Image (cartoon, rainbow, N blue to C red; front, side, top):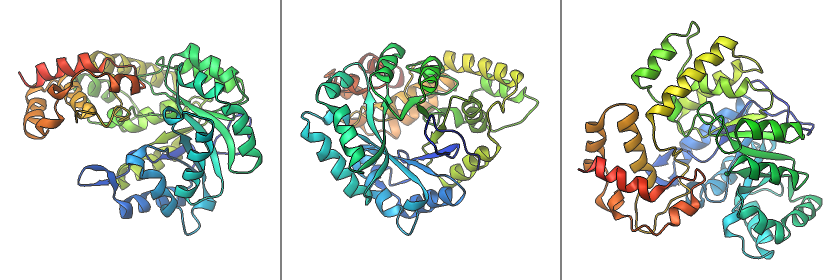
Length: 378
């Protein structure tokens, strides 16, 4: 395992962090983690040098933290740094800060959360939490030992990001960053800005919700095949992130043991500047190809779920994007008609807008659902 710097903090994180948002599940139920397999995966990662594990209040229908509390028994808690996040959107009063933290400590079976982040800050959530006194509260719970370092994860524009970075003496931040989304949200500019101010920068979605590891469309596959150095698609995406000196570590939400093994092998080969200039130019060409192929920038984060009407928004969008990116509309139509329950399809949308206010990508979900249904169910 390769280890990197962590902002101004005197600690060396593993290049690869384990994100507990996409753990293996039972019968496709997001709230039913396959605990036997998931435990073997997390522990295998730690046994091979991973020392950063990330979760959050809502992951796996609020089961991820509970699972990790059990998974990290038997000495594994002492071998890793643990990160989780306050559900910013649920905070209404100053008393909620302690209420959520104390419950998360209980779920995670720990006395201290090493890295505690405000989840999914944006231009609306940050002022609310700030005015409720979250900065002063964070300093208090750091002093009493319930948290180690204080930070935030982020989904909004780079101007908002810069303002939040400057508003407090943060220890770390977490941003979405991959070669397709290099200039999306905080992006490359935000990465450089935070790192220059001594923050550790954690990268989420380095594989863009797994989409950069799937079998490539023909146009993309030809580009990858032209490279003198042969890599898997996931390895290309991860090495692009790790090549940047401003990145402290990359989180991967692994769902299978095979993914754990592949990502560990990639992390072993990682390093600052590991991609040559010719490699970086190739990645730029692949980025341009992907951008023309997938019209909806959905990462399957599932913040839009559950829909009050039952619409499985990420699944609808995945079918629509696949129909475009892979030039295979018949396959997506079969998936929509045969493998999606009628109550989960896009035509159940009543345009209530709950999903759009929750979407960290700022997707116009209602309009895309209408278009997707028109295409997938003509």
